[in-house]
Image (tube, rainbow, N blue to C red; front, side, top):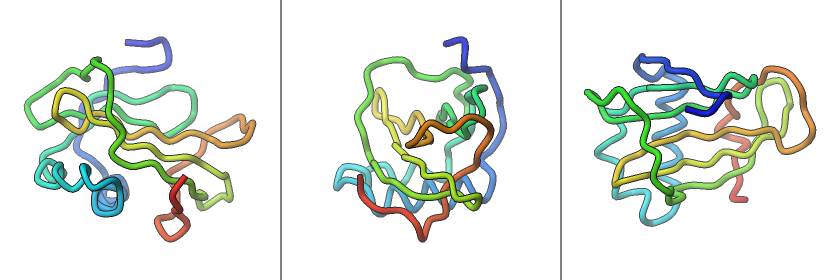
Amino acid sequence: MSSFTEPEHRPLTTEESTLLDWLIANGSPEAQRYSSQASKIGVVGRCTCGCPSLDLALAGNTERTTEPSGILADFDGTTDDGVPVGVILHAREGQISELEVYAISDFEGTFGLPKIQSLKRS
């Protein structure tokens, strides 16, 4: 694991699950092929830099995948606190693998997930 990632094993929160479902439904045409995985995804790691990025895996898996990723969705949006963020949903080895959320501008500190109604294609 990178120095900015630590293991965390838990189900998705309601907010995370809602965002995941939205990204799958509105992402690339390929993203919709992963819709059956959404209800089976759990968190296996999280970023420690202050962003809400998550490593994801299908239920029963406890490790993140590390192969090169394919991008299922790529959007820009704004958090409740007004932080402009980018959101990318990754798949690796045929499985949803990462929900990446990053500040678009030089922002230091902790921030949350974007508001779904603010999301626009990158």
